[in-house]
Image (cartoon, rainbow, N blue to C red; front, side):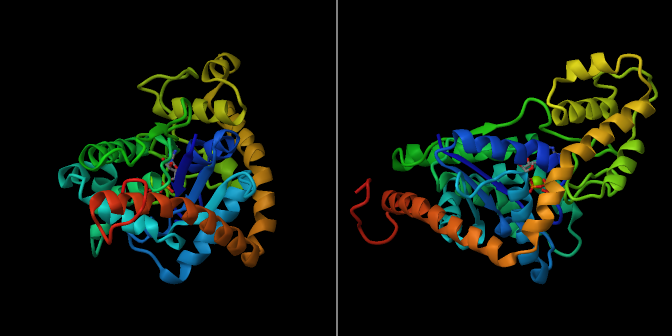
Length: 334
Ligand code: ATP
Ligand code: MG
């Protein structure tokens, strides 16, 4: 079982990234053979960004992942831009990706309206590069949050279309989306997902936030006019808080509803805030030590890139041969 997932080095990671993705990455180390995780710097350049900052943000994200429990002995952790096979494969896959599908992707629509100067072609092309990320490793499983479901669908279609056209060279991967916590909501605007680029500052809880800041954000979380602590479609705020508390205290939403039956919203919000503070505290502590050593972080990424490349090179040789690109070779498809 090969597992692959990518995470952006944009800004500080938030509770949604942590619960929706990073926790599954850590668990995937047990099952993955191997589990491969990639910091996607090439995806981060599809929106406005600062070149001087990008490298630093890659180190930030690397340190967060290590602090959360990724172990370079038990997974492959690397920076996307270090393995050039990703970009080559994305071009090759563009020939089996319908433009109309790219146009329909929610992420493209949401992020393109937010761009002021330039809607880069890279933003439209993002899911093709993401397909290449996963398909280059012939991964079976892709742990992601709910918002990435349609991108995984698109890469499955690309793999199927490739296999029909050029022979069975690629594995058709499956999304692995957590049952609870797949779409953590913005605390100020529960109709939106918590997000690096699109959510409100006060509604976004960062993994590295100070405990006081976390508590404040939860105390101010938007709820609804009712009084009951239960999940319901017309109670997105309370429903979101129930899910968060269930995940961070390792129990079910039903158990949380029972425990807080009759409690007041205000007390409930404090309970969620305190539980999140306790949950993130050890990560924040480990982060400080890890982040202080750029050299060590770079060493981990470089070694990861070497291991990743060894796998991707094989897939690329096969794909090129099947597609008739380059000289005839003695790869698996020759
Ligand atoms: P951006 O808004 O710029 O796309 P992001 O917050 O979505 O940033 P990414 O690095 O793109 O961060 O996402 C990393 C992983 O976190 C992905 O698997 C994504 O599905 C997941 N994720 C992002 N936001 C949430 C959320 N609110 N709840 C659960 N999972 C999430
Ligand atoms: Mg995202």
